[in-house]
Image (cartoon, rainbow, N blue to C red; front, side, top):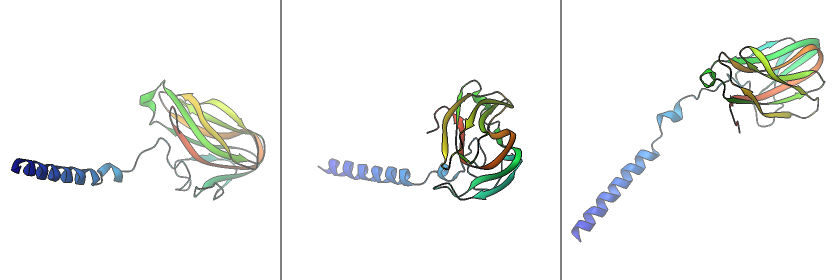
Amino acid sequence: MRQTIIFLMALCLFISIKGYAQLKPAQSQYLVEKGVLINPSFEQGYKGWVITGCTKSLVTETPYLDKSLKLTCVNETFSIKQVSTSLIDFKNQQGAFDLQIKTTASGVNVSSITNGNRDNSYTVISDTTFKRFKEIGFIVGDTDNGIEVYSDTNFTGEIIVDNFKLGLGNLT
């Protein structure tokens, strides 16, 4: 009987110590996670993005997100682009990108960028609500990868973009 009581006390002590160790926050909970894109939802202004053409501003039109990028264009070309080298260790594997976009006129395109070139371009249909480009595939390049929203022809209208994602395979 005495051995059983000592065993149970030791077991309780072991469980309480192990339980405390598991409840203690891990250092990784406090480290900043590095994503492929810098500032994917414009929460830090335009940091990380190369934006050419049109008049840019930050707005709060996207539900549940703080800021979105808005371009107002009058008969001009534009480009919203970010390129990264963080995926090159995964070259030739399946990549994918997501984004939300709303445009008031036709002529806007979305494309992945692989090794400095546009790849897999898609035309955005103008609408008053946001469109979601989801899990658009591309093959990861060996020098850089990225995403671009652009118009190579003179465009007049507004474009609002937000919530960009770029990574491997399934992004959900």
